Length: 152
Image 1: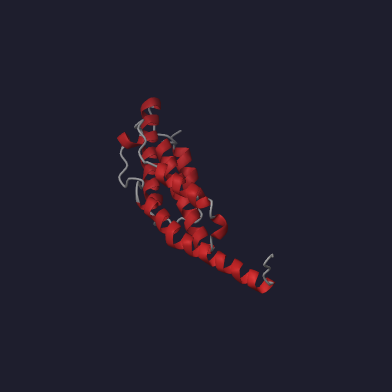
Image 2: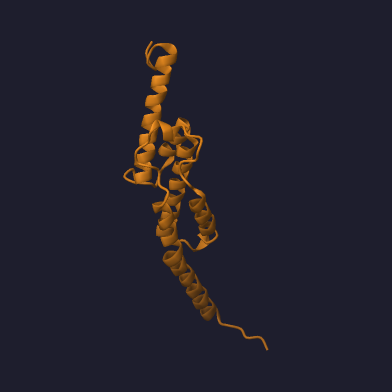
């Protein structure tokens, strides 16, 4: 014998499953993403040694893994969860750009941060890295050419 459910019951069960999945994402996934963002942030005081060290400055492994895991459940994200997910991805992009030590990558990431608040530490600190690297590039240009960059 096959048990069939009415459309109303099927809809109610599907809605309940959806609600449970959203609750699971909010209660377990979001805190985990937030914990990852709070660790291994971009250092607040860039130095020339940090900027040009061949060693990776920021460990992005955990954040990358957490985002990959979270992406599996994207169909259960509500708007606030989607926003947290997008902001977390921007944290990762900024951290990777700083790891590259490439001023163009950092500048592009800073310009493309559409959901991250400019008050976020990673945003502010990446901006500091960009400024320090621009200053360093200016010094190097002046030493090589005998004049500051931008001078005729």
